[in-house]
Image 1: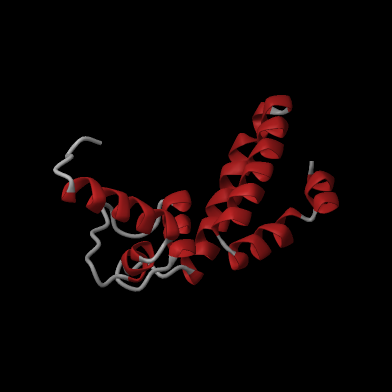
Image 2: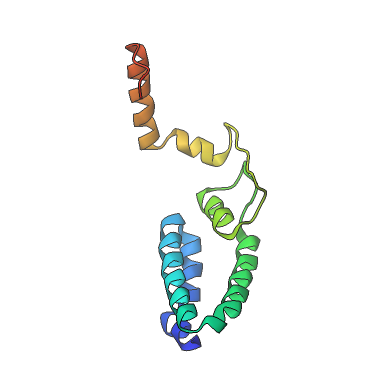
Length: 126
């Protein structure tokens, strides 16, 4: 079982993914999940050991994750969700980093433009 992790260097890959962003983290997390699931399916008694490993990873992630909703970035929010860390529920306001980021994303700007055009024409349908 440990050879599987050593051969695939999954710890290094996961650390790199956490450092480079949400998309790569999700891809690696999915890959790790699939591998762990296969191991547990083949060796059900390994579930407790897997849970201990995940708890250890959670401790590491907690140390590098900003859980303040006003200053957390997208990777922090992903970590908070994935590892269930930080306060719940989270409350955001208009000046939070992620809120400001959303205001300038292309898809949000396109939706805003479309909504304003419809409103100016008296069309309030979705």
